[in-house]
Image (cartoon, rainbow, N blue to C red; front, side, top):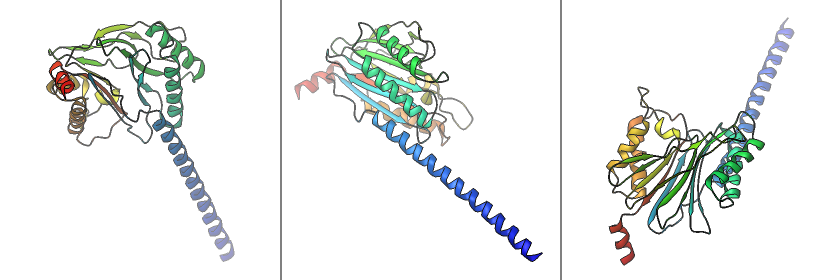
Length: 280
């Protein structure tokens, strides 16, 4: 009887050890997957914003988990225009990172290859529709800025409407566009157009910003975002970015983020500041 009891104990220990080994291997596989996804993600994020005369540019992204699904980009075109993009890829982990790399490749391949933004985004949409799983999609805000005139042509494919906070105190939402990318291959898109005047600030953001929650469950919302920018309209782009970050931190009071937080800020320098910079 003692022998049988001993054998049963040994067998139980072996089963438990096998389970522990399997769990450790699963953890190691997950860690390798996250490391790969993180490497892919970092490869496609700008190392620094470009220097554009008369403008200040800032971009930041904080994933809520180790790997996020947000993408932002600045592309300097040969014709002098600046492409500004911010997208939100569905999903997390390696799948989201790979989809982000596909989006990055498509945007870079099509930017400047068409006569209109509608042509550019329609081509990106067709590529994604043909190459990503049916249950995946991408929201994208894509804009082309003419630094000389301040004209901003844009197309919003299902993304949160960015804000232009004008130095005069008004706010403008940039909503013209169409469906998220990858849902319908022949989707129709429409271009919007506006103008950034000296002192104006463009804020492009992911839903992790406006959906950040307080301990009571209240969302930060676009109104608070506008108020932060409006109160700090005289600050630099970096200063506005810092004010938004600190406001989010104060509002959430340690509540864990449910989604990635990504911001792109473009400020057209005021005439007085631009003249002072030119005189230095």
